[in-house]
Amino acid sequence: MREYAIYKGFEITETIKTDVVIIGAGVAGLYAALNMDSKLNVIILSKLGLEESNSIYAQGGIASIRLATDTWESHINDTLRAGAGMCDIEAVTVLVKEGPDNIENLVRLGVPFDRDENNNLSITKEAAHSCDRIVHCGGDATGYHLTKTLIANCRNKHNVKIIENMHMLDILTENGAAVGVVVKGENRNYIIEAAHVIIASGGIGRVFRNSTNSVCSTGDGIAAAMRAGAVVKDMEFVQFHPTALIYPNDNMRFFLISEAMRGSGAVLRNRKGERFMQKAHEMAELAPRDIVSRSIVKEMTENDLPCVYLDITFKPRNVLKERFPQIYENCLKRDIDIAVNWIPVFPVQHYFMGGIKTDTNGLTNIENLYACGESSCTGVHGANRLASNSLLECLVFSKRCANHINSKKHIKPTAIALDLPEKAAKQLDCQTYRSRIRDLMTKKGGIVRKEKHMTDAKAEISGYLEELKGTTLNSYKEFETLNMATVANKILTDALQRLESVGAHYRED
Ligand SMILES: Cc1cc2nc3c(=O)[nH]c(=O)nc-3n(C[C@H](O)[C@H](O)[C@H](O)COP(=O)(O)OP(=O)(O)OC[C@H]3O[C@@H](n4cnc5c(N)ncnc54)[C@H](O)[C@@H]3O)c2cc1C
Image: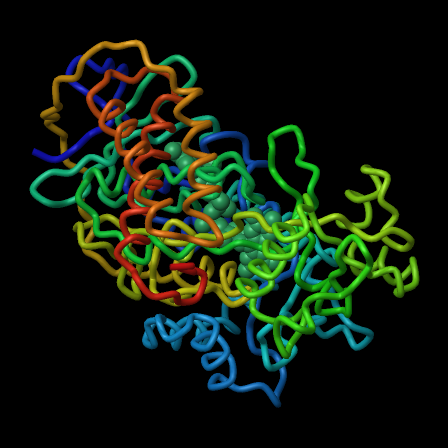
């Protein structure tokens, strides 16, 4: 019998029918909906309001070939190099070759890309790219403008309905095919019967204590897909960003100080003002993210420091304000004037390379179940993501999901017969479980990994997981905690099995 988060006696008030249900209103989910045949009715679910997703927070931009001097081979090779030999070459080729058409499509949809004096899209370079190829909006506010434009376009489509504050709890399957989802609203639970289910629910960042990710990133879609029998892949590959501002916001999200800042010449210093990246790597501050992150951790540990500092004070204030408006304002709110002061930074969780395994059409091993965006693993990132390839992946593969569904013979959603497990009604201390999972993953499953540490963390987390699996969960936080325990346990399991260091997975032993 397959696993469910819900259980016998779980109260469902209503059944809704649609052709396609998309879990997630980030770039992947929204763009999938926009590319769907307008004859198909589409429901998009968002766990919280539309202002909360990783997509909204994306800063730097989208990588895609623009210059005549740039080539597919160059972007493909940069991606493969960052992925440390673990990428799927077919998927990378699709990503790179289909990128430019999708950027043109975004221009048609009204995305306000920054432009140069000749009215061409402005492009910039980021670490580990051999050519200028990153398009951006509002300086460092790409995600905000992109997501807002996609939402506005979805609102204009008669066949697309966005429902906010709806939590998907389980994916429903019959005879090996996805047939819908169970969702939790504010006071009621629903079944949404759908001929096709797309998981676009984003990453897993909030399984760690310190992350740049939205509060939504608790791995719900990945965990639900695992319960439904979907294969997941590359779960040990978690990317840490070297430079987040050390002060979190109200949601305990850490504000990212974009790589583009180091690309513009910013240098890292310790408390004494000394640069330390030059001795760590020939590319100094522009070394791959995992190397910069580990060098910062080493510097912090050896000198018992809470952070290191990013120095961009050599740039004129007007240049900083224009190129990095979000970073400039956010730091100023904390009394850090980046034209004068060094920025206190430390490495935090940032991106998830693993996820639900898909083919190049976004299809999983379960019939009618698709995944795209950060919750999927198409294989394009391998062991480490190249900067600004993730929004590109969202676009290219969510469109492919839509095209695949559009090309199928139209099937009606089937009525669902639920065969649910019995679970025990028990009092759970979910707040403690969540907090312990985050601490353990940060201290023992993070940037530098050791067998003993991971084994200890896994033993404790798998204990919570068993407890949560056997208990009747009620609040959405309880369901979320089950999902956090599920993905954390799988990350540790796969990290323990990979004995060598590769890409973002670093084994000290
Ligand atoms: C600070 C920051 C900066 C970044 N900068 C860049 C950049 O410059 N370039 C780049 O390429 N990438 C960047 N990234 C990465 C990129 O933004 C993400 O990988 C990408 O936006 C993920 O999009 P998505 O649609 O897959 O998921 P998200 O945008 O995270 O959206 C997930 C959606 O799923 C919903 N959801 C989750 N769980 C449930 C549930 N149980 N039920 C219902 N709905 C659910 C959420 O509500 C949300 O709507 C950045 C990421 C961060 C955090």
